[in-house]
Image (cartoon, rainbow over all chains, first blue to last red; front, side, top):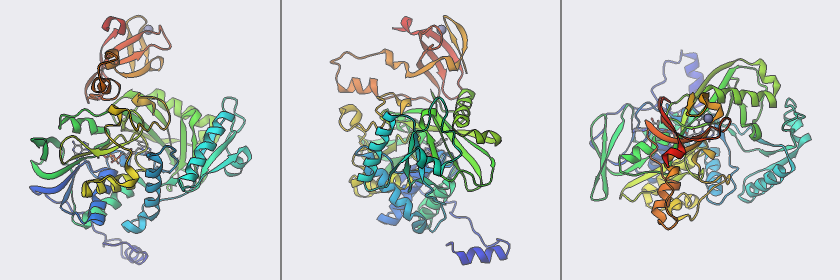
Length: 417
Length: 86
Ligand SMILES: Cc1cc2nc3c(=O)[nH]c(=O)nc-3n(C[C@H](O)[C@H](O)[C@H](O)COP(=O)(O)OP(=O)(O)OC[C@H]3O[C@@H](n4cnc5c(N)ncnc54)[C@H](O)[C@@H]3O)c2cc1C
Ligand SMILES: [Zn+2]
């Protein structure tokens, strides 16, 4: 089933009875060339690119819950390429370019909206730092523009500029940054993979990884054993449990991140705004809800819900920055489990077990990385070579100390990134 | 979430600073080798259950605490002073 304007018109006039499920519900086969553990954004994108770019279709994605139930359906959907360190810089730049062609590639409306991101700054020192970051973005081939207070005021007249704690000195504007509809991204990649023959198997929890003489041979699941030549661990917040099945310890600590949405309002916030000093960021969804969030709850957690002190903190910061949102009623809040790495950057690599691969450490920024994360992982699985835009994400960088990518220079404490 | 500080009693989570796995108390010898230091600085068990971790009663007595907490249910079963653990 392909989407087109004509088809939507026809279905609209005939009671929308012609739509079909976007993917099959297959039984697991006894063996696959490649098994992907985790049907989140990264696992689904990897499956799509394995099939579409490398012609490898004897692939299964095993998902313990349902497609879109993990972080891919829980995030605040910000898509950007404003990283500054080698390793990250070329990777996120690659990802943004994939985003820009994604709807054509998938024939799916992921509602990618390049509405622009403004990172606010509040001191001379921070201005220098943001100017430097902007220059890094320009030199990686992406866009950035430094706005002064008046420049920000023109775009965001409703902010409280003279607030006593953090008066607004300006902002770094990234015009190609924006948002996308998170569920649609999962669904689009799922359909792309399924339509090329990949089996998406839901309600199938991996409970063991079979290894013989240092070579992976398959997995044990809640729906029986399945053999495979290669296995990719792409379980995001649950990465440590999956790696543990292969006897591995990962440099990951799992933390909860919360997000919030208000009732639907008429369009009032046109951009993505980040207020780093208050740990607050916001955008408005196409449905009209104000979608906002802040920092981690800061303690390790596997509960996909957060605690009240953080709710209070985020809302206080929001009210400081834009008092007008105090009139909106908060509709829902939720949490997701983040695979926090010790340098804040991801891991996409082989392991010491032959045929076993890992992608994790997505922290709270793995949604924008979905297209590139899937793309470079597919490249690694198919060719056994690192993709040129993902050579830095080595698992052994921590042990060796060479090539650590600590974007925020906060050191090795997992929750500080 | 409330934490029972052995010195100050039951206090709100907001008074405490979270450091991470209590493995931080088991610092290897300087010459223990890359593997031992990797285990200490970076690698984590990260269990979906009981976890022994370091918190500081930052806005209270300032003591470092070892808290045994279930990181799925947030239940706390034991809190001791870190100085007793080392
Ligand atoms: C509140 C919040 C806000 C965020 N905001 C942003 C943002 O604005 N921008 C951004 O770039 N990123 C953001 N993120 C981060 C981003 O959502 C994640 O980094 C990213 O989605 C993780 O990759 P994924 O989609 O593959 O993960 P997931 O969707 O979590 O996929 C992993 C899947 O693995 C499955 N799984 C786990 N264990 C097993 C097993 N044993 N067997 C089978 N399946 C298993 C899980 O059920 C899950 O579906 C945010 C996250 C949260 C929670
Ligand atoms: Zn105390």
